[in-house]
Image 1 (tube, one colour):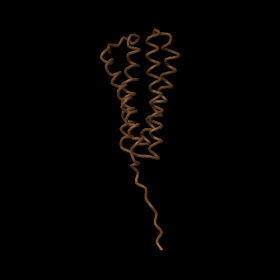
Image 2 (cartoon, helix red, strand yellow):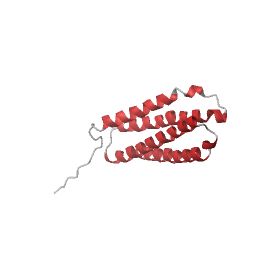
Image 3 (cartoon, one colour):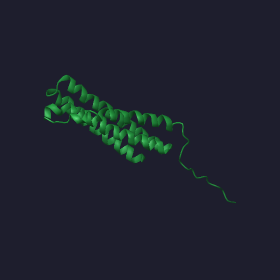
Image 4 (tube, one colour):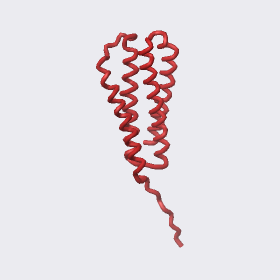
Length: 139
């Protein structure tokens, strides 16, 4: 999972940069201040949790518990639900989309973020799940 988290974190961070640039250079001209603020919130939280995924991927090289994998999955789901729903909701008028049903996904995604951080806190108290081999000298 560690490589998957590093890849996911890199992927989501890359798209946060792309979406941030798109928001600053294109959407700034077509969205009102509230819609643009919503879009920027989506970018910001996507960045935060992209970095969290990168951190988890690196942490899994040194310390491994199943709970840390659950935290990473919670962050991925949170990014998709929270940031994804905010992106679409912020541009729905511009694109003439009827997607008000997405509104409840935003707090659900936020809940996944919170759960991910709670799991990391819990995992920090667990013993390392890695098995280290000990070398013995025969002689």
